[in-house]
Amino acid sequence: MCGVIGVVARSPVNQLLYDGLLVLQHRGQDAAGIVTAEGATFHMHKGSGMVRDVFRTRNMRQLVGTMGVGHTRYPTAGSAWSAAESQPFYVNSPFGIVLGHNGNLTNSEQLKMGLFREDLRHVNTNSDSEVLLNVLAHELQEATANFKLDPATIFAAVSGVHRRCRGAYAVMTMIAGYGLLAFRDPYGIRPLVFGKADTDHGVEYLVASESVALDTLGFRLVRDVAPGEAIFIDEEGNFYSRQCAPAASLNPCIFEFVYLARPDSVIDGISVYETRLRMGESLAGKIRRDYRHLDIDVVIPIPDSSRPAAMELSKHLNLPYREGFIKNRYIGRTFIMPGQAIRTKSVRQKLNAIAVEFRGKNVLLVDDSIVRGNTSREIMQMARESGARRVFFASAAPPVRFPNVYGIDMPTREELIAAGRSEPEIAREIGADELIYQDLDALIEDVRSVNPRVAQFETSCFSGVYITGDVTKEYLDGVEAQRRDGVKQAQLAATSTQLDLNLELVD
Image (cartoon, rainbow, N blue to C red; front, side, top):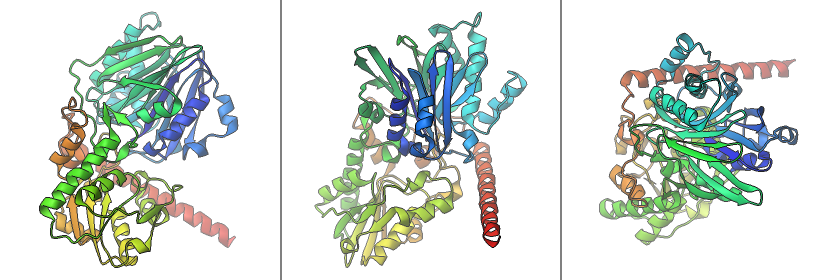
């Protein structure tokens, strides 16, 4: 999961891109980058860390131009946590091209070998985004006559990308001297929207991962980029679009609505906030039907993304709703933090319990989902330490039993607490007196009911069904092995750093 943004404006775009990345910060806290275009010249700055830490005034002054793209990153399946893999990436042949990408290619290794052996292109990092950039560059080269581009040629190149690339991708790219290109994979797994603003100097366009970026920057949402569609906006602000995949179908990632997206976003015509309200309503129905024996005194959400579901659940069960945890907003989202040790350590730094809301009560805690279980386990312990008599736990999502390979950091089965365990076993693992999961059919209906035109969703982390049809056991085993190696390397690096610090102290 990453955040991408692109702007074609009539005035400098550096501040727009920076503000947009701040709005999309929840989609990744590992690294950030901005590239602006001044004619055929690119200006780039990127680095590790949060948006506010990567960019300084001197960097912003150098990002001149009226067109640009930005990216905020978190590492996905098997990727490293490295400044070298911050985006956007750049290639200078056959044109100057920069690219930022949200998603994950499932055939990245095969593409990399083809780029090296057949296309005579070299990839410097382990990032599938750099692979995707080079595939696009090659397809542009193949489609171009006399090294001149027009929209038809660009769309032909995107069709070539769709033929070669598998997996999930929402792509933001800029071609020096030509314009901004954005496209979405043929299954529409990862979100991408665009909007426009009418100014005194003409129409400006903005493309982003979520509609909230348009809202906060003063742009009017036009629509989502369709699965398989590409849109191109040239330097003069002329807009072009074309369907570039012959058999596209919409299958948005359902986990966007559970957790990833901001509640004030609208994705594929579906209000994220409204879906979370409906999750709470259907979860209340399940508790009323199957868990009437629970003597619940109070409903408490795990802030922030579970609040709408918890409020609606308490309303339908006619139970008091209370805020039992205060969140330190200067600690990042633990699910998307790189590294298990960092995630576990940050839970208590991030949340603090209000003891009076727990003392002597039977408490129902509501969270959006349970992935690894570490956060849930720590929260259960905090509730008991605060004096709760009994603690029940409800998840607005079904059990996460399978890896996600489409751009969410759920790659290994052994890391998923629900993989291979029954619900009573999971309850014991996290220390809950009772554990209540949402049903998958109910979750799908909760989301679909907001926009009945969306017929199906990508649900692999819950169902084990991979919509692209190319994810094999061998592929999953390979991703898991790659991740284990990455974890070992990170542990060794951390140990080496600590040894260096110890030696400095001794000196």
